[in-house]
Each structure stands twice: as structure tokens, then as C-alpha cells.
Length: 183
Image (cartoon, rainbow, N blue to C red; front, side, top):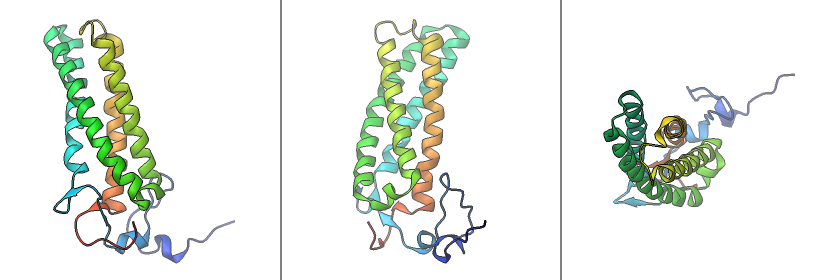
């Protein structure tokens, strides 16, 4: 038995609607969007800050690969600093993102918001574990445990970053400009 899609949901949106992965709603496609609750002069802070933990943690993964290929402790030492930078900036980005998540109903309404939040929380927890395992001896825990954890974090950041992009670009959350009445 076929079910009909209500006209208010996906009739005119030129993008795929694949619940729960991708939700394309006409009402959001044509509306102005919702501004971030954490901004400076209207510019949202979460997208500015989030590039740092992504860069640090992907860099840590690459440093782990460098150590795996060369056994040079330089790469293990670099990975520790990158993990520490990724953890600190990830916590800052997470706090800012959590303000928007708790204050903007539309962010909680979509599975993309929940996937983005849970993916990033798991990535931060795995990063803290990875850093803790290396703290006493920076080279001992790199192969294989550190490399596996860094790989998982890099993959998680890619997936959760996709969902973060869905929130901004498809659902218009945290945009610049006049906000719709919905929060």
C-alpha cells in the first residue's frame, strides 16, 4: 500500500528525502532559517571553532600513520600535542554547539541534530581515552590501539560533520540573516 507525502513536506524541494538520514522539507527549504544563539555580531561561533578540533584530530591520525610507517618518535610526540589540542578545542566547540542544540527546537527535531551531537561526543570520549593511554609513554600505545582510536575518531568526525552540514545547509540552523519565528 502506497502512502502519500503531505504537500507541506517534500513536494518542491529539489533534494532527496531519505529518512532518517536526509530530511528535505519544503517548509525549511523556503524559510529564512534560524540564527545561532551563540554569535558575535550575528556570525555563528560553532562553525568557526569546529574547524580546530577537526584539523587537530585528523592531524593526530596522520601523525599516527607517520609513526606506524617510520617508528620515529617525532610522530608520536606530535600526535600527543594534536590530541591535546583536539580535545580542548573539541570541548569548546561542543559547549557552543550544545547551547544551540538546547535552545533551537529545530536542531532537536531532526535526526541529523542527534547524530551530529552523539557522533561528536563519542569522538571526544575516544580522544580522551587515546590521550590517556599515551600519557605515560607516548610511543607504546600508538600501535595498534592509538592508530585504531585515531582512525575511528577521524571517521566519526567525517560522519558527524556531514550531519552538521545537514543542519546548517539543508535545515538552515545557525545561519546569518533574519531569523524565522521558529526557534
